[in-house]
Image (cartoon, rainbow, N blue to C red; front, side, top):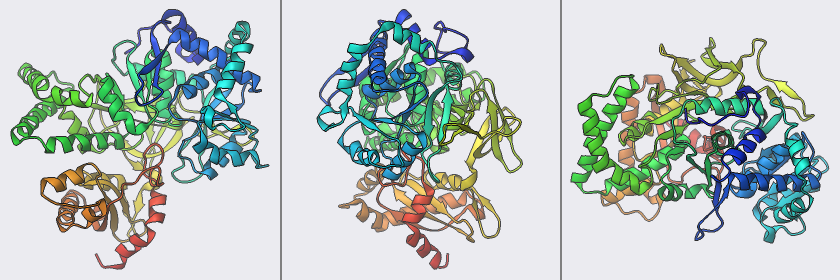
Length: 609
């Protein structure tokens, strides 16, 4: 357990404002929130006592705009202080902050604005205004006004600065203290709209009790220094960052470092050398690809030393995974190579001080987990959903299995249904989905079980292994079930393949779209003297196509006949949220990919395998 701090109440009775009161009173001079205002600027920092004063002023400003207890307020901003502080201020008013993904399409924004019945939205600047302003004129949308963080881009709209100024004039300490004390554990703390991989986003209503219990129980599964820093770069519309970047830091009185541009996270990690880091699988894949590209350019002697050190690191991880004491000789050998071989390279990437590393949201490719284990970094994979307040199961230093998603957190039950779907129940499972009229539609059965939509199994030691999403399972024309994630992760083990989509529902065999790894493919080609002016040229080079064929053959050799890829096409351009193939949380939007490349998929089936 990380936090030995006094809790201002029993875990099930905690509210977020009570934690801020404690932090300001007992840890007031500790750093709470840091950010950069420009690329060349240093970090600006607020202490916990300063945070509470800012929150009090902001709460008065939002109250002056007419924000009332229980109403939803929408926000579309990056990871900047205006976002983080506004979230806390709205909670202190009893309002419900709702963050919308910055990559959301206009129709998704309109759906959320209608569904949430929000009258106010706080947005970052001109880019966001272009999507939000039309909603002010839409009679079907209750939205009445916008507040803009970037004053120079606000036009006729209210600015965040003016909101702060009015809050400073109108703040009354007695009103603020009275207001937050009215918060109850069963009140909504936030609504998180799912990222909509298969349809319109659903509003998941989560209470103080859901999220405070989640934070306390997750904290019990980690061992970190007190008040550790958290590098906050994932969007606050993602349940993982709401837990790791807002609620857990409040519980731990920790220090949040806001990284406004997610693509700059690698640079921030190099600078800050954090003791903890969370990344969705795609982030860990890209970091691994970057490290492999660097290692590929090292002299052979150094590469051999890294390989030998990796063998020791993986052997040590194997003993820990089995719950065995690491042999003294192995521990001593590992300590030597860690200091001499691994740490100097990890330090260049800012990864040498890591104590805890985590991942969630999608199945983690086992080759990526083993790669990092070879560097002495054991990624504690977890599993959960927005509807379960984040984590349901987690690996921890006290018990982990590489490739699994761990065991249930305290107070949570799991059950495997007859069709393999994972069911769960407990106090951290949400009450239900928000309806347009503000009521909640329960998603649990009469016994309290929630169907997660994931398919998996529980082993004899209680570890959960997730195989796929129930709705994403491929059923071939001969009735065989195939896990696309299993096939995709197997072929992605080759360094040339960065992304993959397998298709075959209702067909007699599988085909695949494969995407060159943007980091490793150029390095692989350069090492072989292959010159290509563009990714498209590289994807058509005979040597690359030949190596891709070997990669698919090697994957097929490890898969059963039904799972094997019969035909495929190699693509050059990486998929991402901006182009629509990935959700903002970097999960594959299979429907979008299938629609976008529908003609190409049909071509693959047009020729005999």
